[in-house]
Amino acid sequence: MRSWLSITLAGALATAGMLSVAQAADPIPVGVIANLTGQDVKTSLQMTRGVELAADDINAAGGINGQPIKLIVEDSEYRAQEALNAATKLYTVDKVEAAIMFGGSSLMIPVAQLAKEQGKVLINTSSSSPKLGEYPGTLFSILPLDDILAKDLGNLVAESGAKTAAVIVPNNAFGLGVAEAAAAAFKAKGGTIVETVAYTEGQPNYRADIQVLASKKPDAIITCGYGDDSRTILRTVRELGIDAPWYAAYPSILEVENPEWMNGKLSGVDNGGYAQGVGKAVLDKYKAKYKEDDILAHVYYGYDAMMVLAEAMKKGGTDAASIAKTMPEVVKSYEGASGKIVWDDRGQRIDPPLDIITYKDGKFETTGTKN
Image (cartoon, one colour):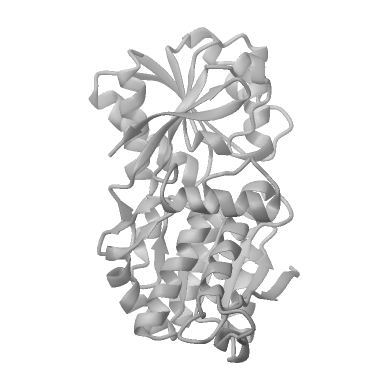
């Protein structure tokens, strides 16, 4: 494991020539754990940039009661042990009271356990296993868990008119959580699951896993995934001549293998609420700072995570116990880049704004909304 960067983001006050109080005061360290090497780097990097944009805004407005935010970013390499190493360094060496994390549930769950043991706070921007709800007072989620979003995914497939569906997901907490909840919702609407494929990640070819679907002829394919694996899965299905439409949880994090073949064939459900208001402002700031137009939803999750944490620190104190106590209160009045955030008593997001996303002409477009 190695430290990716450690930066203090301190902004100047609007009054020209005036030294910012936030710049002069001792900084408050905030940890960020992200896979900046290894798997799914693009999505993770964008989440980190969202945190940085929020820190820019916080420090420009005077910091946390006069103290600037200092981000300490550690690379998890998308490996559970490296994620634990990163969290251990942040909590015990850097003395951070709260960390913001990107990573799959196989990383997030052990880090949440460590945070609980250390009496620290962990803010989740990317994982969605229902098991994350087992850490109330320690882990707080900016995106909903799989059992919430995937239910809407299953309903979407049923509403498309499909009567049969196959499920293709990674064999991990994320994939199996999506599969279970989406399939249950689809079957509750009268649909039939003809086959479920839970594949082992990191394989060069998935033909042996998927070829069984050729004879099943499903009306639709329910899926989730990310990175190179999703590209390989899509290529394998195309080569096998399986031409059913795809419905995905978080479709924009899939790597489309053949844009022409997938045009109009991939849709799904993603967290929404960022097309206007705060989200639009964050989008504009992102484009201006990073000179990129290809922005993923995790920019908004990272931004909201940092902003909610900062509001809790301002109102309740900067120690972990105060943060954990205050965040559920401040979130009630927080209107974020990902829309209004509603938490249950476990600190898990419920009733989120959701967007229907469709892949058209080489890019993802929002074609509908829910909630």
